[in-house]
Image (cartoon, rainbow, N blue to C red; front, side):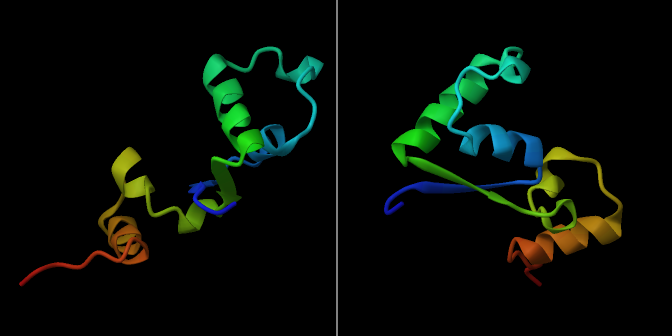
Length: 84
């Protein structure tokens, strides 16, 4: 959608829930308010979620402890470089 915020996730179950047309799934009763909020935004066309394989998730450098090699890979994926 034009003007929508595009977000990446590696959680395929969350993507299935966000993109489903059902609001009353017995399997989704435990889903918290945040997921329902996100689903509303998807339905309105304000947010679009895209799948990103875990190995390509640049944001991991901000959320996980990584080895130096994985940190460097995430920096490259994010388009960051060292200033010398």
